[in-house]
Length: 125
Image (cartoon, rainbow, N blue to C red; front, side):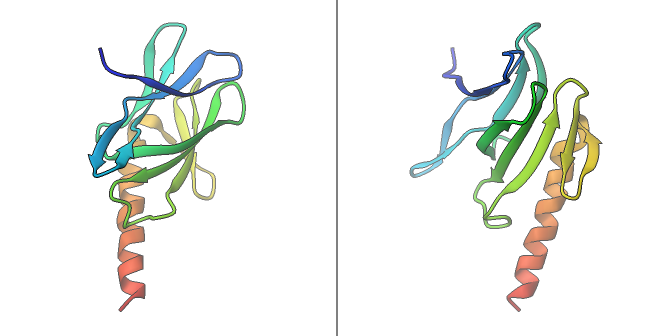
C-alpha cells in the first residue's frame, strides 16, 4: 500500500486533495495532487506527470479548491501556478478567470509553463 498523504479536505468532507509524496532529488520532495470524491471514491482530477507538485490547497467553497502548483525542477515558473478546481462541475479556472474542462488542465498548464519559460529566457537576453 502506498503512503497517501491527505493535503486537505473540503469543508463538508466530500472531496479530498491527496498525494503520494516522493523524492525527486536530494531532499526535493514532490506532492503530485489528486482530488478524490470521498462519497464514491472517484478520481476527480490527477496529473499524469508525477513532476507536478501541490505547494498548497485551500478550499474556497465546499466544491472549489485553489491549488498552488509547481512542476519540478521549477525553473520555468519558480513562483508556481495557481488554479481553482470546481470539483462538482469538473472544471478549472486559471489566469484571468478562464474556465476549462479538467481533462484539458494538464496540457493547458504545460503550455503556460512553456510561455513562462520562453519569456523568462527572452528577458535575460
